[in-house]
Length: 330
Picture (spheres, rainbow, N blue to C red):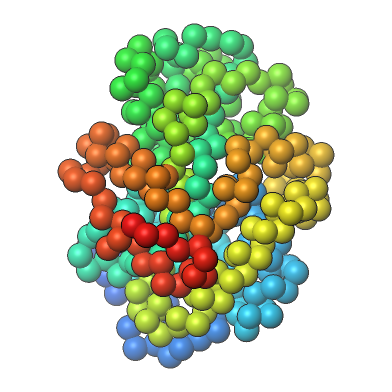
């Protein structure tokens, strides 16, 4: 099981749902201004219980790699986007690894208390799968929710293939259920869900998003700006461990798959095949900043009307916490 710091965060989330409507911005956690430096790092990560590039964080915890850096790391599996970021903005989590568009929009907003510090999983692993082969140019594609990365992709696909229609459905499992009930032709998915459904249900790939629109980071890493100011060593230590754990996946995917599989409730064989099927594994599991992928994300957001001008990544992305060899000129 992914170990989650639920109790206190759940209380904060309940308070925040009301506070958000009232326009409150003060946090109820240790990340509030004036708090003392700490060795704790609380991470809200979208899909920590379903995505291998998030679950690998728990592997690093279990192996004691963060402890070796003097860090006490805990993970909360967030639902994604704004809801995951909210607990970072208020200081009730210290870091969020979540949807790219939500992080960009929050990072650009004055007074958000959000600092963007790294891209995460910089290949486009999104595909749309169905129970049968259909013409992608006329398919009905499911996406998760408004403002999500999957909606951004679908909008890009519709600009390229205007015959595509779309429907907001929810998570991968909800999309697959909608496919099987005939509501949509294909639902979004990533590995290992794709591999698992190909193995168990004979799923067919209708659209491979990377082939159509190229790469971009699936997620971005954002930290509470007050936490970052007080705890720089924690963040540099965190990324030192991330470099190590991503290298572990690249260098020994079979062993990494055996560690990740029980966290995602799939077999080691499925997980190993999923890593083998992941596009450009060396790039996917790397912190090295890819300027082309960042530019592509900016272009997609401008084209979708989510932002009005290209992102100035040199200003928005603070690479100073990353190992020097992973930084890029932006």
